[in-house]
Image 1: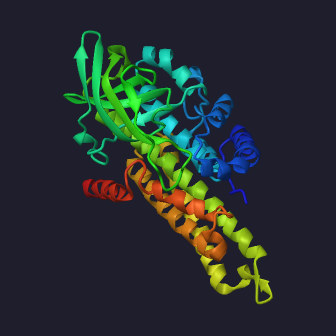
Image 2: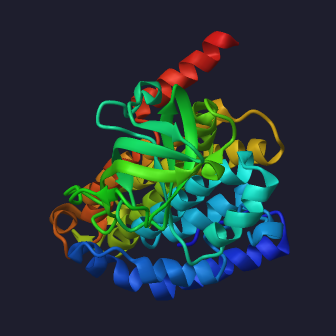
Image 3: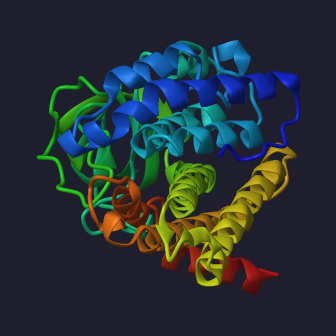
Length: 376
């Protein structure tokens, strides 16, 4: 059952309807089989790129969609309700473009941003390291100046799209942390074997290794030492992307549970008519709609140019915790059927877990929220 949308323009309404049709006809029919096979949907992402969905929140002057974040996130939710791997890939790509789009010089944006958001290229965000996940200030990957280049050495960890991305937004130490735009074909850049993940099995996640990777100084974004500020700013927007993905996944699980409860009969009537089931489904619906309202409020603050870091952490925390509970409850509604791979509920439950970990674990979100409150 499609969620009701409160959209600011007729153009946005038409966009959501287009995405809904794509999701129903091009994504949902393939999701289960592709996830079972562990195949990365690169051609699907190219198709979506051609429709403009990989650059929605970026300026039209560089080939983006010029859409407010409120609209972009609802598009992301719609895609996630049909195939989470695809939505997560878009969210990661959009975050990977953020430092250049927001902090790059006009010359840098004119040179690289149109290709990055034009739909053909796919990005990755290289911040975390084996010993510096939720503590980006502890990173050890280093970029050493050598004439007109920097030489990068080190290892990044848990990198979505490692080995398949066309470009990487990389944080590395130059004393303090700096930000670089690295071509995915660079000599000395390699990906380790893919991690064997519990869910999102179509999404490649791996360590990314830098062995004397040379990067032109003109590919450094902003001043030396400004990268950590860029990284934290990008994470605020990225957390909203994950929140929207979580709501889409939770909506799919709720829809699956409701449809099953309407059709499944026990003691002569559909199980949805039993009060215990009604209350369970009602709590699931309340969790989905509350999470949606939370990410939309954060997005609207962002669109108005207001501070939204605390609200982004709240949205990520609330939405991903809700997705974990709703998907778990959906398995319970389906009973034994929910525990089998003949129904998507068990896949939704496995996929929900990582959303509580992406872009800062939910324990980190609580720390971020608490520190904002302490500052007043």
